[in-house]
Image 1 (cartoon, helix red, strand yellow):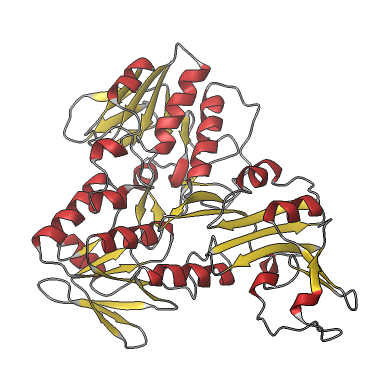
Image 2: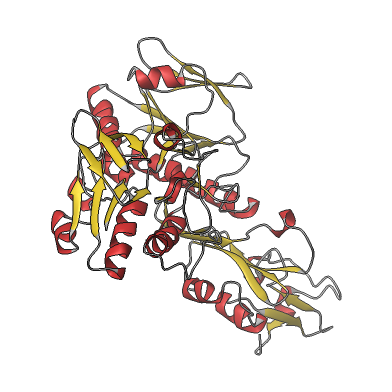
Length: 450
């Protein structure tokens, strides 16, 4: 059996790896328009600041593909799929590629919001860029070097946008992040932690503008700045747009494969066409699109098994999970982080906010089950959180894990429980008094059994 995979991103590459681990005989070919074997996109911003090289980014070198008996075809853009004859067409080539089973790992492209002049100035290379590939990073780096760039604006305060801002700042550019939402990382952080991150980023010399709708890119021959919907203007020599992704679906759509926002798949990642599967950023399942690395990894295991007829596991969606560094600080966000937006009651939050050390830890429980967590600036609880997600947990164990304590007033017995309060006991002002007996802060002692 011959399996053809279109796309050598994380979904395509790991689908191939999982196929090979399940079957030694299947023939596997990957076709991609990329010039490079599979590489990590997470560190693309560091290529701009020259902290890494292209070789540093490449995860699997050519020898890896040979050892797995996977045929990788670079610089091959597939421009047509014929499901009836089970053939794919390569742009600029007359020969057709046959397959028995086809996996579409088409990925996604950066979204460009409806900002006046944005798409045109990007197309005409006048100083507007998006970052998705090695070539994008090299193009941005060269533009900065050759065009006397002194100021930069990043539109989008998401994960990649903030890391991009950090590396652009490292290029000695005056850097501003403009975010549509009223806080940074709205999908990963709550309001309090978002404010803490904003302070930390600004302390590094990066300007942050929140709740800001960019209306227009200013400039004629090249970028001169941006104009917000409220009328404010910001000067800039380069504008980098990191405002989310759009699933790549054109190839599937032209082949009459069912699509909506993404390529529609069932629980086995099968598309509407027989023997054609889809995986990763390009798919839509139960009206949802993920666009996160954990989803790609999980889906690549299921699609490999499904393709081989081993339909013992079906896809049920992926719990949002991110663990990475933002401006050098550890961040993990998993599951439900803001229970106020969820239906039903019985939600409980254990939280430790240490603003002095830029450390924020929040665990979200429903009943006795751990449903979500934010770990920012401190990751000692990381393995526990990953292992216990959606399982019953012990509150005393959690308090110990987060180093949250209770303090008891010697005078009246009033208890100050850090797990339930908005401020750590050590951060209370020196003149704080017991709300019950008005005794001094010194009258409270740590409970030994907390």
